[in-house]
Amino acid sequence: MPSAISVVTLLTDFGDRDYFVASMKGVILNVNPQARIVDLSHQVTPHQVEEAAYLLKSSYRYFPDGTVHVAVVDPGVGSARQPLLVTTSRYYFLAPDNGLLTYIYQEELSVEVRQIDNKQYRLDSEGATFDGRDLFAPAAAWLTKGQPPGSFGRLIRDYVKLPIHEPSWEGKALVGRIVYVDHFGNLISNVTPLQLIYILFAFYVILGTFFETLPMMVGTLPLVHPLIVAAGIDPVWFGIFLVLMCEISLISPPVGLTLYVIQAVRNEGSIGDVFRGTIPFFITMLLMTVLLIHFQDLALWLPRMAFD
Image 1 (cartoon, rainbow, N blue to C red):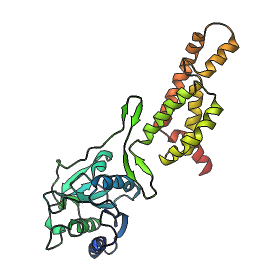
Image 2 (image 1 turned 180 degrees about the vertical axis):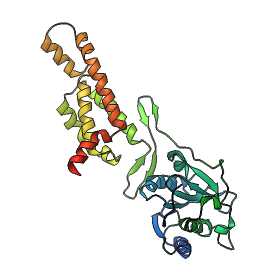
Image 3 (image 1 turned 30 degrees about the vertical axis):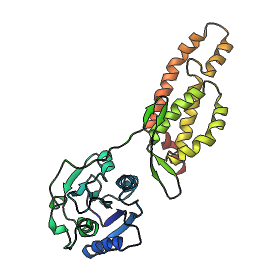
């Protein structure tokens, strides 16, 4: 369980025209005047829970341990849906039980989910349609004051999860979906960086059967580099990966270009002998590349030592 600090983030679909966000901040500061409040966004499309879930997923892990994340996109406010306090090994999350925390359940190794039913943490209010101000804001503030999660309510297991759409292969194509459009008009898909790397892995192995190393690099980098940067892949790591892939592709049986050069130079035996001779090197380089894909620090350790 993390030790709560006085950092509270707010994610809502309230916009910035009305008093809604300001009143939430006022409640938090009344309980804990030392609280530091960070706005993740208040421009979520109204009632779009999936959009809010993506924004929270994309930002929460960059905050210090003990941060309290409050997410209120709540089309079911005033209904029987439950308010939740979710505790992970690093953070606290307060949100309605409508699937907004789906990615948190998926990505965090340790998750404790409680239904907030202690009325001590709810403001007295005539209405029941502003839980952002009347429940989630005071609960967040009291967490920053050191109140234990167990005091907020009982543990539950039947919380709501949204379906997570994963990319799938349709024939020879990997088909994903657009999950978010940012302020600049960039389309964010659900194809992960790891999936992109493996697509490039296969692409370069096939390409190497037709081209030598230099044409491969010069011909593909202007197209591939923007994808790498957009996916958040380290360009230095990708340069190492690209060199390895170019070398692997040139010795890939049965049509790696270098294999036929070797056969022409030796001028004896069959091309099958060359294939068999390169298989141990081919497999070793494949395994080494897969290792670097999953443990990228192995490739980046020396560059970081040199430039840090």
